Image 1 (cartoon, rainbow, N blue to C red):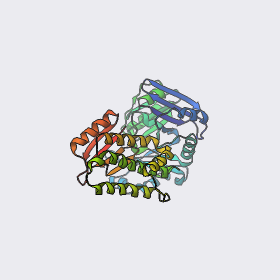
Image 2: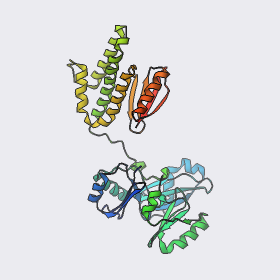
Image 3: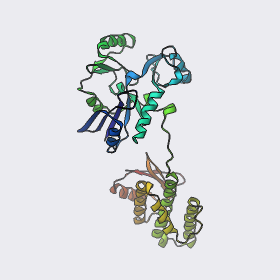
Image 4: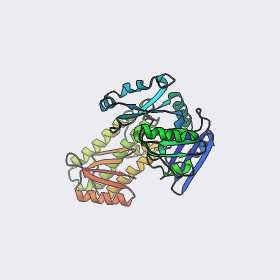
Length: 366
């Protein structure tokens, strides 16, 4: 699986370091400009993780009890007011998880202007960020690494520091005395090697929270996407209706399904008042919804398989970018197993469970 790490070299957005690739194919690009970064990003299949230079951060621990840590988090930021040289409003402050053993709470802060500048520069390169951490946190807890100029130290999964290499012995002894933190050197030739080994970062210390929490952006094709998903559901209805109509002896059931399809279509397209051939009009609207094509292909594949297995139309069909497709279906367990096996043969990961109102629930994703 591909991993991508980005780190600004300067307070401005001019120069960047990038590390990217997967096992056996790891790459490094140092001191590159935004135009080069934009070109590199075109080949990435994973969302980058932003590393903030620890030397540009304010890092400390707050001595607080459990009640303060849980109930007074909004006010804890004022405990550092005398320790920083700027107004607190200029800082983006995050808090970690309370340490019950040491009765402390990790705190990190970055200049809002700097973080905004970096994120805006990446956005201009069409790079979206939802994770940003102090770069020293890539180290394993209780370890340090240094080059000829600087040393990075990670006391825990939530607390990390950086100092000039010549000050490393002093900081080590200070941390051992104050925080009972004995640090071991990491064997690595470069940052590139460190990052290649990195697997997971501490969620609590992600700077992309609060005012910087990524918002769900409503793209201009959202309406098209919603319509396309609704139309695909209608298409599944129509397709399965063709397959099972021979088994429906009661004409009233056929008419009820047809009315449901028509009502769904009219809800999606209230301006489309002249409906001559529902199936053809659905196909036309689907062709206009090209942005949702990747998602729709999965539903089309589902419809084809359900048609082959003579399964009834689903009661509910939905899609989520993280969890994949979900549907509720009135079918017996044996039929659900056949559906599961067919989807698995098509390359999908499938889970089946009992739903509500006697329905079977199926979830599948690539």
